[in-house]
Length: 168
Image (tube, rainbow, N blue to C red; front, side, top):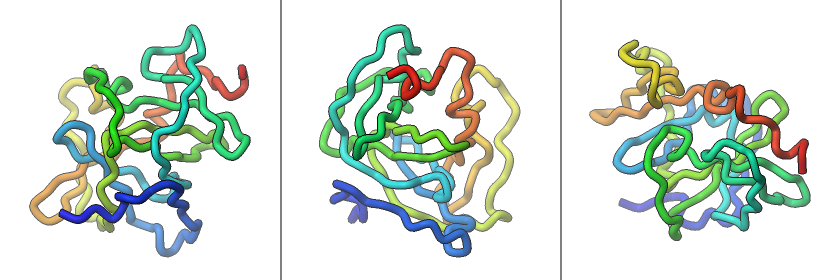
């Protein structure tokens, strides 16, 4: 399967609300497929040098400099309570902006941008709020596949996650 993001040294996204409506950037963690609303995504970059910052939650890997701006970097695997893994050539950072905060999300690999009509997104089952389902706003149906649609706000909201870019 060809991957349109094999070369993502600096893939930037133009802001055009009309064409972004209902579109999701999909990525993988293990064998699970996730989606983020494209409106939050500013760019996708390869893994960069990350500077550790003491006393942050384990899933906040540290900070990195992105064209002179210091941004916190979150390992999504660790945020979901999954075991960590070594970064490789497929590992990338999805840079998102939400509520005027820029954050890098480390994921196993980016898949594609897909359009998921609102009627093809169903709420996730309210089974147990202790794992990564608390970050899932819905389940998008794409053909026979499903994508877990993430709520970016919940992904970043946490009492113990402070804004490391302010401290640096």
